[in-house]
Image (cartoon, rainbow, N blue to C red; front, side, top):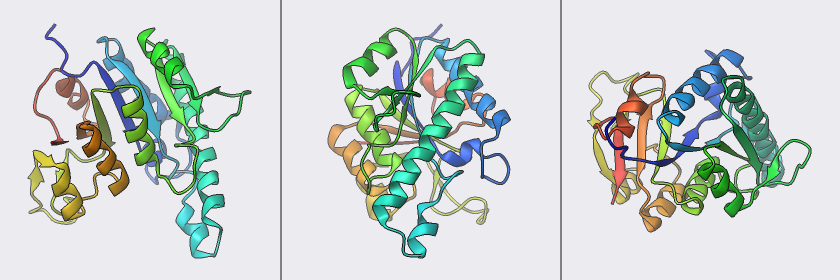
Length: 238
């Protein structure tokens, strides 16, 4: 087996990844499909941490448009990430992958509190770790949570899972002539306002020199090829 390019990864999933065709709710089959991808790379010896959003359960913008308090809307989103985290944990453990959910907001009955050194120890013991409840603070997205946790656990890369095979200069579903980028500098992503991750997350990765790999998780071979060092998706780096 070739030497792995990335030995510890932070996988960033959108909540819609669990939502099935319409992107809403929790689809158990979708959770199992993601769990299978994770299991494949876990069995290669890769240490896997995951951050997942909550867009399939709650979109804060809907509340904000009606005058909802921003902090309240964000806390509701954090609770949504915990529901998704538990669904993904269950799918992984049914496949025989030991998994821990760690929450940035204390809820001892269902998850461990997030403690950096404990999270690293779980990874060293070859457990998959799912970080729920974002950063634990309102006004920060799960993109930012992913960048922050990747730094804290010393991940080799943040892998942004999408349903397209990289970053394009326009929406490839709407524009057949859209051009795909193979490599991007962090500053280019910020200047061009490309929809990779939000600007706070990009800036954090830039300052800490953590590469971001954008790929299609639903391409069965993409993640495995990337871990083996092949050129896949779009790499954002210094």
